[in-house]
Amino acid sequence: MDSVVRLSGILIQDFKNVREGYLDFSNRRKGYRTSILGLYGQNGSGKTALIDALQLLKYLLCGKPVPQGMADFVHVDAEYATIKYIFDISLPTGRYEAFYEARLKKIDGTDGQNTGLDEAGEGFQPAVVGEVLSYSFEGEEGKIRKSPLIDTRTEKVFLPTSKYESLLGKDSKQEMELLVAKKMAAGTSRSFLFSRELLNAVRRQRKIREEDAELVRHLTLLERLVLYGNYELFVINTSNTGMISMNVLPLSFKYTGGNSGAVGQLALSLESPAVVPVQAVEIVEKIIRNMNIVLEQIVPGLTISVKEMGAQIMGNGEAGRQIQLMSRKNSREIPLKYESEGIKKIISILQLFIAIYNQPSITVAIDELDAGIFEYLLGEMLRVLSEKGKGQLVFTSHNLRPLETIDRGFIAFTTTNPSKRYIRMVNVKDNNNLRDFYFRDIVLGEQDEEIYEPTNNAEIAMAFREAGEIDVP
Image 1 (cartoon, one colour):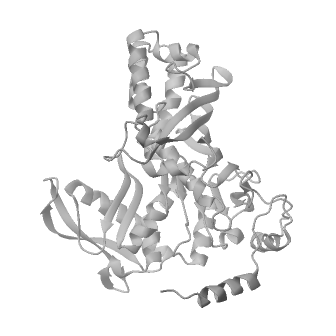
Image 2 (spheres, rainbow, N blue to C red):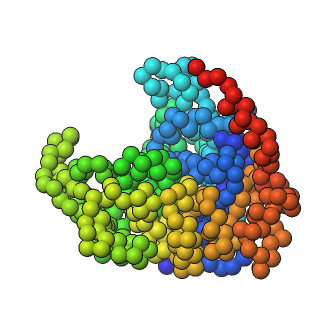
Image 3 (cartoon, one colour):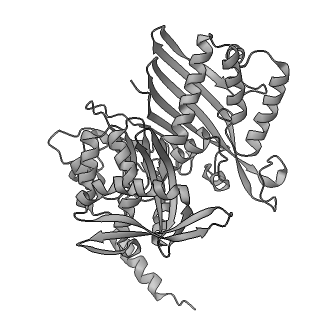
């Protein structure tokens, strides 16, 4: 059995406009292989906060600095934001249930506490603090109850002391180096728990104590989460849609072929030939050939291709190739830039949909999935993924068609209550149309939490009229 990582839940506290909200990603109604969560709600009700929380997770697991702008994601009335992530991890040796908690703190860059300042030394910086990783385990050696593995909420490197010694031994010099690394991680807006410094220290112990089963179990969990963050978790936010509007195609992919593969994102200019490294041309061609198999089925007769335009030296001095993405339909070939934004949106994420369909250990989170995509096609693609796919998809949308095409266990909603931001609909019967049920609840308010803040048409009309009467110089 291959190893599989799934996000099974998330708790968000004091993050953006969410004072508190919990989401269970599991469909408790039926035993689907795939895991889908579609989040619906009115504007400004916490949908994008979920995607941003998953983007934060990717930065943390990859050991990368959290962008400066995320400092403003801490709720204005809170000292810090707290996100708790729950993972279900299946390995040939057993099954982990892992719990990772991180706090995001907003630090004034002018007070000298943060070494990751901009050149002017101004503004607020995010600091990652209070990381805790706990887990339970069930395998051939029996069951191990949930307990903390690494708790950084201490002046020491981390607690509990017994786990520290299990992972790192008793070397005092190494302990001092890790204390410095911990402060540097906070100062540069990085995770210490998933930092290269801590992981390499544990890896060195693994080489020394090869037969230590407890150390192996601990390190296996850490390594698997790092692998997941780097190669299996993809977050597509609305900036991708903005790039498409500017004729740049953000091509996200996880491609596997034979004994090789590729993972990442390429931003390809559509306005003029894009210059890419020589070794990237072959990857792009393989990805596009792979996508065309599906593309011509969901947009009948449409395929895309790479047209090479010659060699060119790149800005870093390396050899590159000029390529132009082309679309072909009805025996006519035109530059892809002339296709609709909806077609470009589908192409930009299609390779990830292929991965979700075929690979169980992949999570893709997409904000405003429906942007530019014909609603009937959106519903049918999600139906196929939900019934026959293997991976995990988290998305937000304003288009309600998926409420009619996928199982209601895959759908959650936002509320108007910042302290209970996410809910699942209750009292929905099997013969109810979830879309109609949702509209009815907006009007009647039959759930425990209000899901829509009512508006008054007469007041809206009056506001339009008053605004039109104002003299604008």
